[in-house]
Each structure stands twice: as C-alpha cells, then as structure tokens.
Image (cartoon, rainbow, N blue to C red):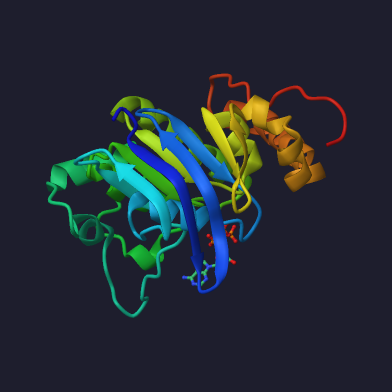
Length: 254
Ligand SMILES: Nc1ncnc2c1ncn2[C@@H]1O[C@H](COP(=O)(O)OP(=O)(O)OP(=O)(O)O)[C@@H](O)[C@H]1O
C-alpha cells in the first residue's frame, strides 16, 4: 500500500446518530491534507478514526505498517496544580535525549524553555511545545486537530508556515483539521470538505470554487480570504520574506 492511511467506505456515529457516512480517502506520504467543515460535521471524529483512537462502525481503515503518527491536539488540559516543566513534558513517553529536545524546541521557535512551567507558557508557545513533542517521535504523519485555536491571526499564520517548513525538512505528511479557511488556501496540497460525508475535495483552488463548498461556507469564504490577504500584506515584511500565493483570485460573491 503506498498510502500512509486509507479509509474505505467508513461510517460512524454515536448512539443512534450517524456522524460520518461512506467516507473514503487516502493520505499519501509528504502531502498536506486539510479537512474543513462546519461545527459538528464530523472532522474530529474522522481524525480519531484515521489515527486509530477509535474504530469505525462500518468500513475499513488501514494504516501503513509501523506508521508513526505525531498528534497535536486541539488543546491539552494541564492541571495547573500539578507543576510540570517543558523539559519534563517533552521527556514523557518517547525516549529522547536532552540535546534532541533542546534542538527541537529551537526548531519550532521556543528555544531554551526547558525549565519553564507548561502552565506559564503563552498560547502560541504552548502549541509549539506540543508540536515539538509530536515531531520528536519523527512521525511519518503529523496530525493536527485545530491546533491553532486561541492564537491570533499572525500567530496562526506563523504556526502554519512552520508546519510547511517542518514538513519539507522531515518529509512527513500532514493531516489537519482547520477552521482557518485562509490556511486551507495557503498551506494545503489537498482539501477535503466534510459535512457528515465528503462534499468535495481537491486542490484548494478547485475546492474553493466548488458549489458544495460555497454552499457550506458562503460569504464567509470570501471574507476569510480577504482577511488573509490583508493580514498577509501587513505581516509580510515582519514575518517572512518569501512570497506565497495564498488565495485564488476568484471574483464575485459566493
Ligand atoms: N464521544 C462522543 N459521544 C457522543 N457524541 C459525540 C462524541 N463525539 C462527537 N460527538 C458528536 O458527533 C458530532 C460530530 O462531532 P465532531 O467533534 O466530530 O465534529 P467537528 O466537525 O469536529 O466539530 P467542531 O468543528 O465543532 O469541532 C457532533 O454532533 C458531536 O456532538
């Protein structure tokens, strides 16, 4: 099997309520796939099934033998009464050296935070530490479930640029769930639009002009793109010097 993860005709639900119906997809090595969809459309459920945290009621999910998945959760409940430093947190689970941990913290932009309490980190730093932990296991695929929740727009943009960079450096695939539509337009190779079933999928350009996508996201789509173009113009000099094409030049209202 050349795909890292493949879902074939997967259906799932909780109690009597169906959440996913007849979902089929495959994730290839090295690609960035983003799942978008309205609240409650089954994105997190699909992610849990794909990474093997849950088993589907119907259909089949296959993962490449020995697949290493680096999971970056939406949020992580840290008990503030239980002190844990960044260094200790990173050393839980996977066996890594202090040198590896220091290098990874530096790579994701939070150098030298080993002695800092997890509870004392800013939102952006916290997500970067979670990312560092996921990357330390040298994943074949990085799975991010709305990993930028709570970050401001420049923080979100910077976080996803980092994801693109590490994807290239480490050669891993990326599966992400995102509400940030502009991210979908910039960072993804392929977008899957979910609403209990796959409404449409393809390159960001194709999906953003698909009627099913526009029906789901409506005017918000254009709004998000406009916002991002604006944001990008302003953050360009400060944040990064390389030019991306972030949005297709679609005209007219959705
Ligand atoms: N463990 C569970 N038990 C019962 N119902 C659940 C469970 N997990 C999710 N659901 C329900 O399944 C539906 C899909 O939830 P899911 O979290 O997969 O959607 P989502 O697209 O990720 O939503 P959001 O964008 O709001 O995070 C929702 O109606 C949710 O209430």
